[in-house]
Length: 152
Image 1 (cartoon, rainbow, N blue to C red):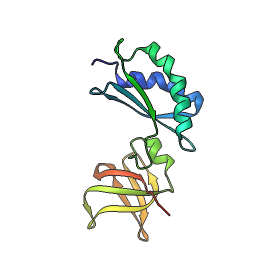
Image 2: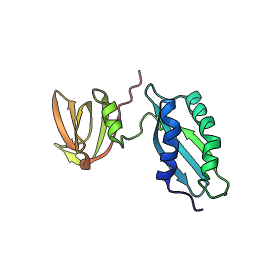
Image 3: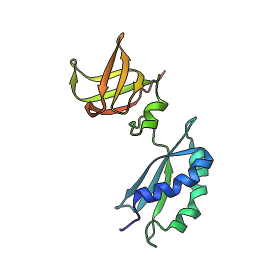
């Protein structure tokens, strides 16, 4: 099915999201199921009620945009999940001084997995405090970085 470019859909939705204090994390299209999924986040985290409010706010406007050129589709609004990978500068900046998990493509100093505190991000690399020292890791060496999830 032909749809409008996801970047165009995202830009359109960001105009609705910004005044609501909502950040569009990603816009995804599943051609097999004809589903348009909008992943959102807010400063304090997103819950089911927040997803529902945003879904209701975008239903009519997005139908006006007609992202699927009059073909039927399902609109989903969801949280990106606790363990979602960092993909934007905002993700990294929001998690400075927070605990992170890092999976590397290849071992660095004998380790392919690292857990520690994200101390800095410069656009090309991250610095993580772990095991009593800091290590600087280029982003192109990182397979996945996300918040460390602790169950207590």
